[in-house]
Length: 176
Image 1: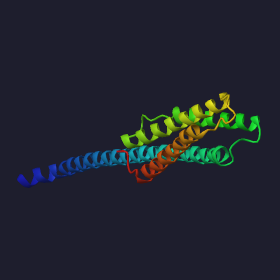
Image 2: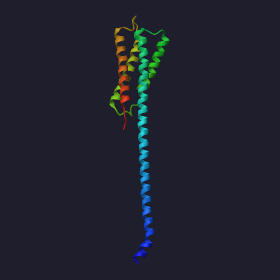
Image 3: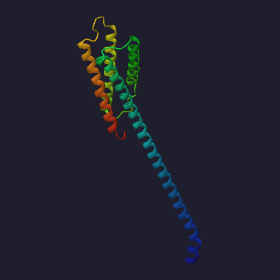
Image 4: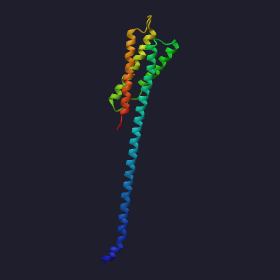
């Protein structure tokens, strides 16, 4: 009689164990899929972060190159060829200053990057202010030594801030 029970119940036990194995395999597959999705999500966030850092670094480089040209025009050559050229330079500076000032810093993880970006923003504002003073200057020599010194410091601050931003962007790893 014991052999008969075993023979009758054997298919049921095999089916039960097979069902348990299928349930465990399905659960393992779902967990594996979830981990894969999480890894993709993390990679996407890392890439997005790096893209934003690279964009900010590129904007800082453009601002630096533009201010280098402006510095050469004002401090080396002493003036612009025309008032239209000066107005264009002021307009470009206003655009750069606005883009730098309005950049979204909320995603940044390092305070050093925010500090360097604020330094760049301040330098661009100082240059804009110095240029406004040059336009309104009533003296025969609107670009006197004091103004040249202030502009030189502002241009140097743009250089310093941009180099800091580039170094931090190059050293920036994962935001997570």
